[in-house]
Image (cartoon, rainbow, N blue to C red; front, top):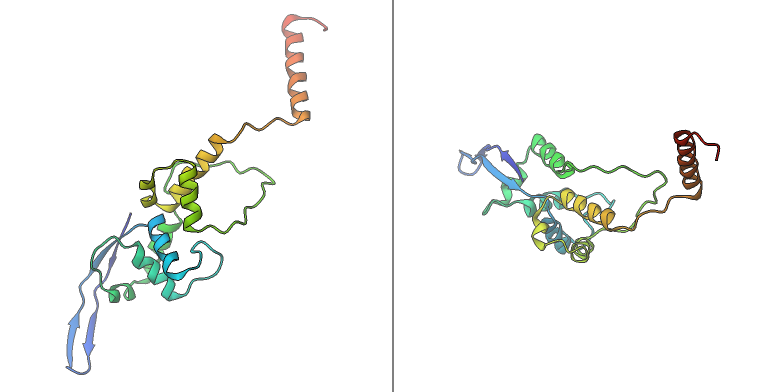
Length: 180
């Protein structure tokens, strides 16, 4: 969860000729499958797609990430540059200590990822639905770990298997001082 502070501002009302101030607001935000699903339901486009989002879509996603109750819409219009930086860092954070060794020449998956695809992964991998509230990158890591752990063991290619047997045979010849 990310907690950010939206600073209050002083406003001048031309009609009443009076100043007013808005209060500083603390927002609790969660980048999760729940917020992604709500956003896609409203906008009917993939959130994780390559297309750039409009300012309205970005602010709307931040609203849907918000766990703080009763936040007025005008608060989201007051988000500062540092607030947006903090939100982007949080969204892009891995949120896990797990890392993966990237295989060379691995094919790139061009599947469009939507909330329903992620729910499908969760159901097929028997991930509890409570995990829909996890940080989205942490959920993706869990899906990847389960896929790797459940995948069949890769067969060794013929050349490396032959090299391994040759090395074992040479070690045994040296160990027993024989010529074969």
